[in-house]
Image 1 (cartoon, rainbow, N blue to C red):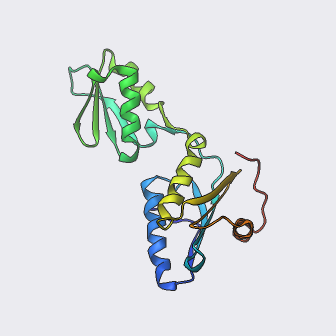
Image 2: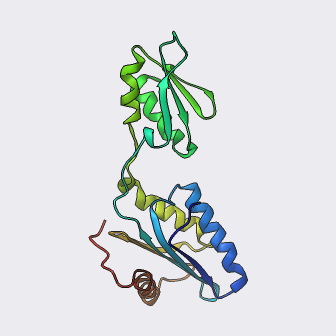
Length: 204
């Protein structure tokens, strides 16, 4: 995972803080969120069965196109195919689905783990179309990914949850017990400390 500007994990049981930080880090990596997150702070309070997470997102994340994570070119000389060499496998499942829809499943092949070939007439005409294909629109998928990340990091059994995404600011609180208003208020204060009080923008 690439470096974040701020990445703080605290626990009232200090020896557990590093474990939680690794779990959060793994979730960020698995969900390809490192480029979207600027700052994150997590506070775990086991004696109150309380998990709090606040996140500041980077602004203006553009849609992910095939050209952002793969090289697209002609296949072997004499064959009517486009070959896609993939750098980031995280986008592979969605890429395959898009190609199946565009070209037909029978024309899409995966000879190697990071290589896809697409059989087609006039491959030169398809190269730019495939390069510009949008695989992921962060604004559409970001909230569900953030919630997924937070749930993965939350201790097992913390099934009572609150979350909000307001502009570039995400808050998540989870517990085993009845959610307390002051826990949510504490999370908002955590966010204020993380941002220095900058405005959060409009709700999403």
